[in-house]
Each structure stands twice: as structure tokens, then as C-alpha cells.
Length: 289
Image (cartoon, rainbow, N blue to C red):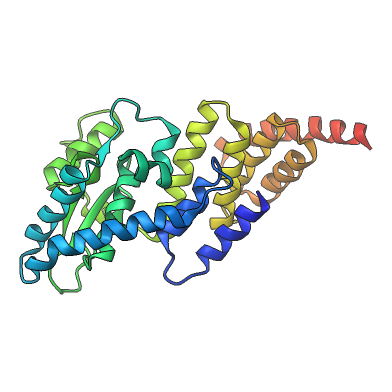
């Protein structure tokens, strides 16, 4: 796993971050010997074919060019949302998504963005609550809210404010018509934010599957993305405990107690629970010395 961490850190040092390369490092959690070149070549071939489809539309409208991309990826190439098995961990692994043509919103968006970039079309990710979206800037004005919003899980369908509000209501578990829709939710996300969301999806699925080594590996990568994610340090400690790595668990949980802010009274219960874990771990580690 140390090689994966080093490669992920190296990929993050690029400016701009190569999202496809970073996502393929993440896929090595499940496929340690993965050859990223195979998937990158597949993206290049898709990009070349998309470029050919768009060659006759150099002066066409943004909507027309997006319609061509949608037809290419979702009809001709048959990429689709995996509605039958949404929580399959393979939906979060770029190499598998490219092979099976099935994914969840964020990985389908990643494929779309990478193919579009190779074809000269600027498509950005949107970390919309509960359902990753895409946006395509309209015009040259400096207004990051002026964009075409697309749903990669529904064949690149255009999303107006009403559709976005309904999607938000689905995520919140109630109708949201009474809430004013904040278009700031449609701002583009950074590469690091996209990768963090991918890793959080994977970690949650692996925990549900009780695949604790993979869940811990995802948490390791989250902490490479941002060492100040204190909750991830806590989670890594708890996962290490499940894996009988008591020294690692103790280190992370002690760090969590030291680094986290405990000023809110509501946090006291969690503090006390973690402290009980720390005391138990100290006894176990001492017994091995």
C-alpha cells in the first residue's frame, strides 16, 4: 500500500491534477497490479472518436456539441448508470467502469469530463448533494453560475433549477419545493473535492461489506488528500482496531483526541467514547511490550 500512497501523492502534485491517473491509483485499492496505461489508452481512443464526431460542429452551439457527446457516449458507446446494482464497489473504479460501461454519477461524470477534455470541450464536475452532476460553461463572461447543468446518470440530460431542486429533495428525504434553491450548489468542484467524494463513496461501501483492509486503504488516501480531515483519522483508527492493528489504532485515536476541537457540549459523548477506546488500546499495546 505504501507504493499506492506515494503514487497518489505524486499525482496530486501535478498542476493541474490528472483526474484519470488519480482515479486509477484509487482503483489499485482493489487491483494492486493494475496497469493504468490500458485505461488511459481507452480514454484516449474515446477522446479521438469524440473529436471526430465534433469535427463538423466547430461553430455549433454548446447544446448541439453536448448533444453530440451525449449520443456518442450514452448511445453509441452505451455508458449507463448501474441502477440495478448501484452500491457495487466496482461502480467507483474507473478501470472497471471503462470496461463494463456501467457506473454511478461521479464515475460516469469522470469518464465524460475526460473524453470531453480530449475533444476540446470544457466540462466541469459539480459536487451536488447526494448526486454528482456536470456543468458546461456558457459564453465567455466571468460568471461561474452561467452553465448548462447535466446529469451523467441519466444520459447527460439537462437539469434546470426545478429538476435540481427535485433532486435535492430526494437526497434530503423530503420535498424541497418550500426551500429556496441555492445555485451556489452548482459551482464547479475542484479535482481534490471530486477525488475525496470518490474515496468516501468507496470507503462507505467497503465498510458496509466489512472489507476493512480496503476501507482503511481508502481512508489512507483521504488523509493524503487532506491531513486535516480529523474525522478520517478517527475512522482509520477504528478500522485499524478491527484489523487488530492496536498500535496503529492507538496512534490515530490519540491524535484524534489531541487535534479535534471539543468545545461543543454535543461532542463530549463522542470524546468519552473515543477515550474509552484509547484506554483499552493502551492496555492491549502494553501487554505486547
